[in-house]
Amino acid sequence: MDMGRFGEAYDVFMGAALLMPKSEIPQIALGTLELVQGRFEKALQAFRAAQRLAPKSALPHAHAGEALLFMGKDAAALKELQQAKAMEPDSDAAVFADSLLDCREKGLFSQVKP
Image 1: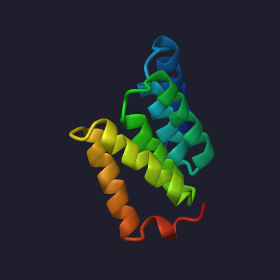
Image 2: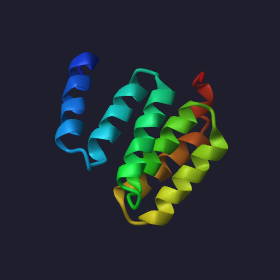
Image 3: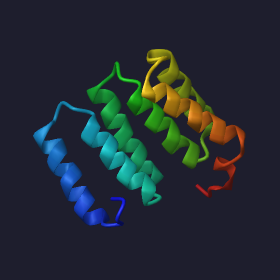
Image 4: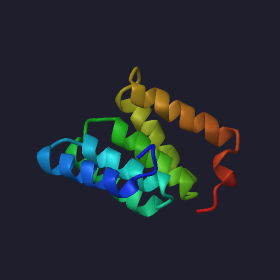
């Protein structure tokens, strides 16, 4: 994915999703792949799938918040990010949520066209 080989990355992540159907991680990877390509709605769909697979995990909520910020849906994004922080306050997901909130406060997401 980092090398811009999105088709190959998609194949790898879909293979992982098939091999680990109960894990949210491949869905998060698929969502991130969609996000970096600017397909925010598809990214959000993948993050929602991750939430269904791991309802007690904060990470899918943080990623959903990220997609929603890129979509210009601040209220929904704030809800997801706050939920991620509340679910696992001392986790990497909470740190990620805080960094997204910081970027939002600095106006970085207002420069993105949904």
